[in-house]
Image (cartoon, rainbow, N blue to C red; front, top):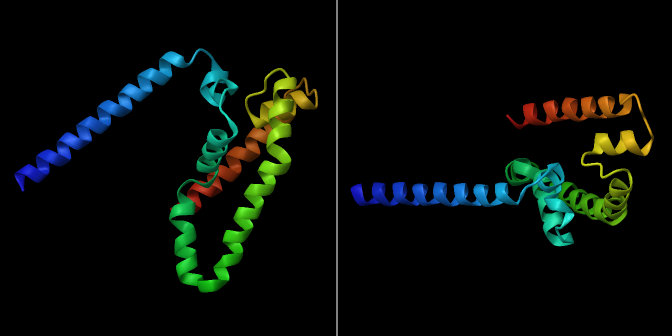
Length: 146
C-alpha cells in the first residue's frame, strides 16, 4: 500500500515537472499575441485542425455525446453524423478563407476583431456586440455542462 502511494506521488511530481518544463519552453518561444493565440501562424493544417477540434468539442464530446447515445440509442447517430459533416464543411468552406482574410485585415487574432476590421467598423461596435454574443452563449454552454 505504501509503495503504491509512493508510485502515485512520484508519477504526479514527474507530471508536474514535465508540464512546468513545457510551459517554460512555450513561454520562451512566445514573443507577442500572435505567437500565443495562433502559434505564430506556423502550424500546419493537421495540428491546427486538431487544436481547433479539441477547443471546439471539449468535454461534452467525451461525456455528453456518449451519455446521450446511451440514453437515446440508435437515434443518436444523427447527432454524430451532423457533427462530423458540420466540422468537415466548416474546414472545407470557412477555415482557409478565414485564415487568409484575417491576415489581410491587419493580422486579426480573434473573430470579433476580424469582423470589426473586415467591415471597417471604427466605433468597435461590431467587435463589442460579437464579443458579447460569444460570452453569452459560452455562459449557456458552460452552465449546461453541469
